Length: 204
Image (cartoon, rainbow, N blue to C red; front, top):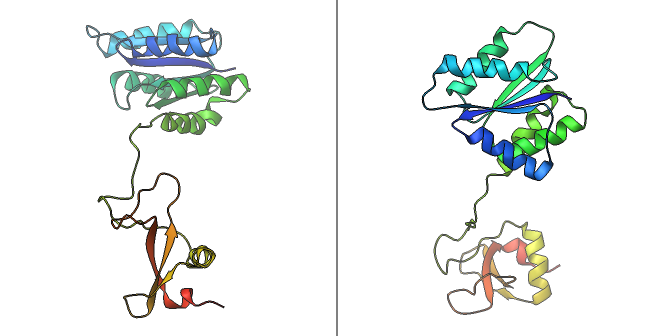
């Protein structure tokens, strides 16, 4: 089971360690190292070396850093580059709580650090969400555009028998019932129009 070192500017790494253990339980060979405002790169490196010495497994270590290119990341990268061959030390940045929890799960399953990097980065990205819903309708009362094959739309139109003559040569219009939370069109109708090639509107 590989070791994990959480590194950050300030007390972020300590906070994530505390929060992750509230969720996943107390972890063996997981430590947090913080860069304080009154410390420089050499001070942080010394603390990092002491943290490594305190670990039970120093051959396989996964460093999780808060920021790519920051002092904690750079000092850990220097140690990795200077390390002699024979062990697996890896580092990734963008640390958040989902990433740390996923790394706990991965090491309990017996994976090596090099095998879990992709998975923990994916979990970190999944954790980035917003409560604001995306909308494809930029203007109020703008007709809804569906990304459906013409054949499927034709089947729905045929079911509800809602063909309309097209105003554009070579095209016709069908109207389909609104479903879910979609709003009615500008006319107040419960149907919204879709323009299709005329060949898609010919019954067979």
